[in-house]
Image (cartoon, rainbow, N blue to C red; front, side, top):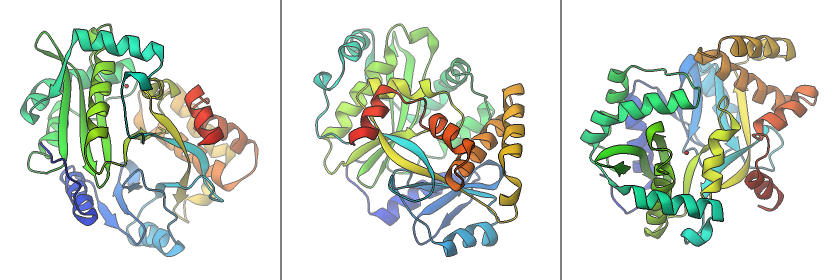
Length: 330
């Protein structure tokens, strides 16, 4: 699955857009970026690694023309608005055990001894990957949002789309960990990684992440690997694994724009209410996401105590890797 050469930008964006459309999402292209819908009419800008500054006309086109209630996108770190955030990336030209800490090297070596890392077919991923999906979300205390049928439909939708690959770490013939990747111009995206708890002691995620990263940086024309953006609701520990594997926190500013009719209702009081709902109903998806959106919106538009508190929360409680990235830069 997927080729090694970069595709033209428009073609690449269209391939990814087609996958999103097949999932039932709305996709809109504006002057600065592409956007796809999420739950509750929230639109996320993509390609995700790009830093944009959409014009007022674009924002109005999306909110008034396409009915978006909120927009989420990443700005350059020196932008005047938005909240401090990071993208998890690797942009080195080489990658090996020497790039890792002693802790990571030890676990990677163990993982490589215990597992076999290779690409697998989409058919096998769809057939065996659901068990890993359920286990991964439960371990991270995150809410399962789709049925097995919907999950399989999501990944079966890439069957005839170029640019996707699926890698896995196997133990005794069973899937221990998997990762879906996509080539977006001169970047590779780690679309989704998962591991079953039964194989954490085998260090399957370490072996998988290491081998895939090692392979991708050697491919021609690769500028970087995008391992995700800071989540609105996941615990900061979710990204610790990536930092230990040599990835860096690239400083950006995250911006949330709200529909003009919605903006006046988002304030410290409504934020506190939604956050309380999220804490009391952790099994619900939307309160945690809404609290995160409100937090970033307020942090980017005011100088009150919400902003100070948000800067700490949105910075992911400042991991050592992130602190280093901001200072000089699983």
